[in-house]
Image (tube, rainbow, N blue to C red; front, side):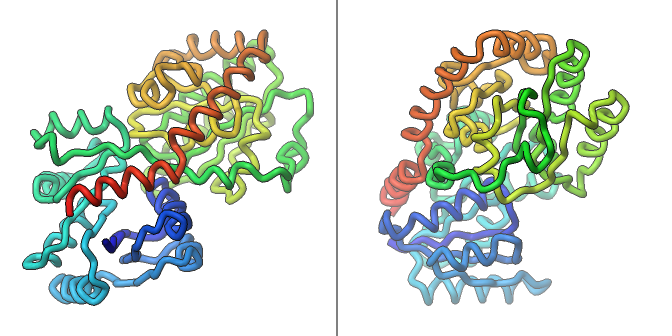
Length: 367
């Protein structure tokens, strides 16, 4: 059984991080695979060094030529299953594999709320023509299954997996407090995620202003880049913090390569979701043993066992999050004890090894 993973690009993102962890674990899991990508990106060298053969097949205006090159590569490598991470790549795979025995798998990493009309047409066409559709949570699967009237037997849930080895380094190479000159008395808070419509960073900013008004000594780290296509989301947060006098309490760090080092240094992780399908950053924070505060979006209830392993607050309710956080400040030891249980839970349930084994069962079932 040989799997070909199709990528749009090799830039940093949730799907790319997941696949990079999968590739690095492939030799231990005996997963025979190759990677095929249309565009390069900042993770290209990391994927090449993962040990999995990588092929750059750039897309051209001549779609027939691209499909021919893709088909020839798949046949040459005797690929049994083509696993796409985007509907457009699943469509390319379906067209390239016409007349072959290759199966088409599609993982949907997000929702369709931001899709253009053209993108939605592609999704509606291909989602019923794949061999199997894979979702990263039960909540997401139910959404798509109902909206697109999908056959239940073709829809599978495979939770995202994380390589927790990167979070267990015994040494912290850089103290973020020293780097940013943050007082040891300040409560160090943070969140991880690019400034995109999936997340509500502006809500977090408003809650930070409440903390300031109540004289809480804190410093907050926003780890995530400004995305040009929705740059206003980042700009609004920066402007708000400046207007409210939060500049000396908030740091916008942009994209960082040392997130696994930063997470264990936080006193708490604060996250606000608008339509996450899983929440890798939330799980990584839980795995780092950090108390996590996240809104009661359905998938967050799912991955935290209804709030058993994280503190859930009412979505868009600033006062509710504020109350939970003040409770945390008054009894930090109990929150820390809960976070240690959470770390044990997620390391078992959401490991890259667990992800790979379930994925292999899905593959075997469709051959």
